[in-house]
Length: 333
Image (cartoon, rainbow, N blue to C red; front, side, top):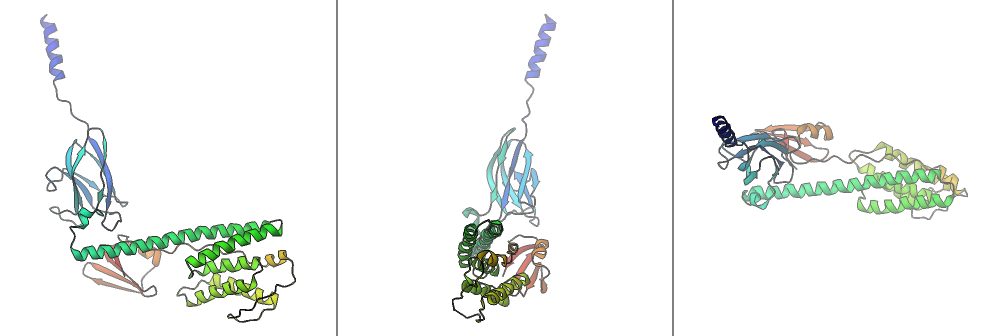
């Protein structure tokens, strides 16, 4: 009987031992007020607002952080790499971490609660950065769409080249012409678009229009600070063929309607130069980008300057000044 009672008491004592909770996980992104991810610094968990960091997680180059912590309610605090330990950049209060569960918590400094606390001058600067980034994103989207259209044109020219009948060839050239007429309206300063348009017009035997398109491409290349020799070669070769084949010796300003030579449609198409490979999208710069990436995209600047913690790159050929702080882009002028 004593042995049974002792065993029962032992089991009761074991059942009264404290059960330790499993840790929970937390992850998220750190986004700056201009909308770009922060690529360095740390995220800490604190139970006294921000003074004491119980857990600290490193922010990755993609702006993300993750880690584990005991269950509880914390203040999530972000500090940049150069932020003193008694200061912080931003924080989010009352974030609960549950046992065995994953908590998602971003630190998004684009929210009005954070922006409204910034000095008026800094808010104006931030608005200008946002405006420039919006313009850059819009330009990148335009270039992306134009490159997609150029790939379509390349395939249409190939299909026309292998088409067994004149009707199919005409349809393919007409597709390219319609696409390039639209794109030259969207971005009239892109010479490659005018070359593609001119080649489609040659295929359709619209020689006067083709001559105008090739002259437009050459004019753009002449005024460009970085002329493309390949485009110039193609445009000049096509103009020479047009004028030689149809006896048109009119100058660039000629508005005369040219009569096509007495040659079969297939022979005229055989003289069309295949379209060039679409150009790569123009490089852009974003706030927070590393100096190494800027050098990769744009090369060495024509002039450099250092003033205190700031370093300036002057690209005089692009009329652009890039300011770096701690090796990252802080402004673009």
